[in-house]
View 1: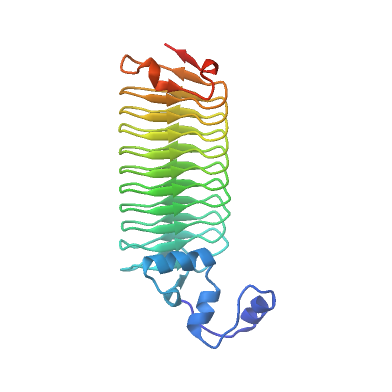
View 2 (view 1 turned 45 degrees about the horizontal axis):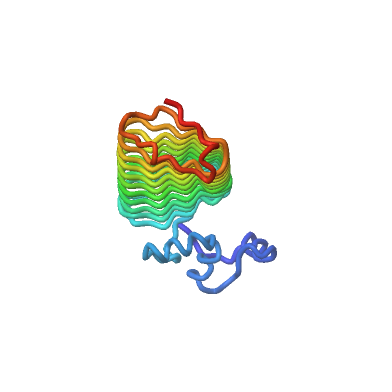
Length: 264
């Protein structure tokens, strides 16, 4: 647990503008919590003054919860509770298992691995090559910068790749996948999904179900499996593959149709 003491190290941090000294333990604790984490805690109804600060090189496992857990700038091993936590990795290559509950997980600049567990989770990646998994529930996953891997798991999920060469897998459920910038690979799964490639040379696979595939800007590869697909190639030299009998010619649109090449 965090202990409020005006020690020499705290004075050094204050001198560099990292923290602000205060005679109030609650105010001092808040000064050590990143702004985005404080906002997430407020949204979840948690008091920043009750934050738990993980010790360096020491794995942390939560109690009964819910908890506001703040990692270090090194590699942390964090396990949350089953009651809707807010977990902030801070920096380093962290491994976070949020467990059950509607969790909010924010990671830092490292290459992080996050398992949201059961519940409707919000998982926000950082600047590194992150691996984010929502598991069961209607999750929101965002890779931000880096070459990220996002797996929605079961449920109606929203996956945002952000910048970088990302791999997005919606899994079971009616999912929305947004590749963002970069050459991304999107897979919808067995249900009715919407796949948006965004900028870059993207590969979109609808899977089973009645899917909508929007290539966006760049030379994209749009591939269906089973179900009734709607293909929108967008700008660029696009290829539409494996069209089955359920797909109609008028379901193929693009900014310039003659650039698209349906392959039967």
